[in-house]
Length: 285
Picture 1 (tube, one colour):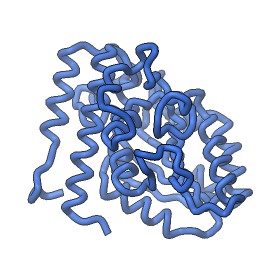
Picture 2 (cartoon, rainbow, N blue to C red):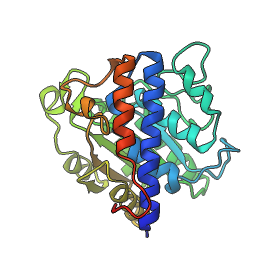
Picture 3 (cartoon, helix red, strand yellow):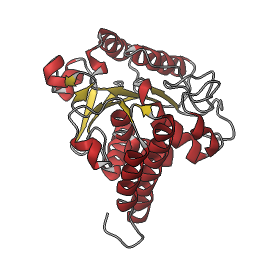
Picture 4 (cartoon, rainbow, N blue to C red):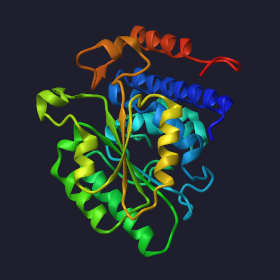
C-alpha cells in the first residue's frame, strides 16, 4: 500500500527528474524533450521503490533489469540514475558531448545503471524478452521492465517479441507503453492508426493493465503492484496514457514536441513550471 506521504515524495521525485532532464537538454541546447518528460513519473515510481537495484553495485546479479527501448528518452533515465547515486550529478552537464558517459541514446557500456544499449526502435523489446528468458532459465526471481514508445510500437520487431514472450511464458516481464499519442512526424493515428494498445497486446496473449492517467504516480505504482501479483504464466503490459512534454505547459501545448532546440529562456520557463508543481507535506495528493 502506497502511503499518502510517500506518494508526495514520488511526485516531487518526478519533478526532480524533470529538472534534471531540462538541465541536460537546456545545456546541450537540443534534445528529446517530449518523450523524456512524459516518463518522468514512471521513472520516479520505478527507481523510488518498484525496481530492485543497488547504486553501489550497478551490475549486482540480484537486481531487476530495465530496458528503455525508447532509448532517445535517455535523459529521463540519466536524471533518475544520478538522483539515486549511480554516478555524480555533475555528469548531467555532459549530455551528448563527447567523451561523455551520457550519450543521446542509452548505452550500457558507458553509463552505470543502464542494462541495455537502445535507440534502434523495436530492438529493446527483443532484448528485454531475452533478458527475461535468461532469468527464467536460470531460476532467477528478478523482473525485467521494458519501456516502449507508442510510435515505436509500429515496428514489427515489437510484435515478434510480444509473441516470443507469450510462447515462453515470461511472467516476470513487465512492459510499459508510453502512450502519449504523438511521434516525431505527427499523431499515432495519423501515422499508423494504432490507437488501442490494450486490445493489441491482449490479442497477443498478454495480461494488460490500462492506466488512464499515466502521469499519476499512485496509479502507476498500483498498476505495477497488480502486475507483480499476477504471476499466471503471461507477460504483463501496462499501457500508460500520458501527456507528451508533461510538466512543462509550453511543451504540452505544442503540436510537435519530440526533439527540440532549446534556449535559456525556454529552460527557465520549464523549470518554473516544475517548481510550481512541487507538493508539500500535508498537501492533498
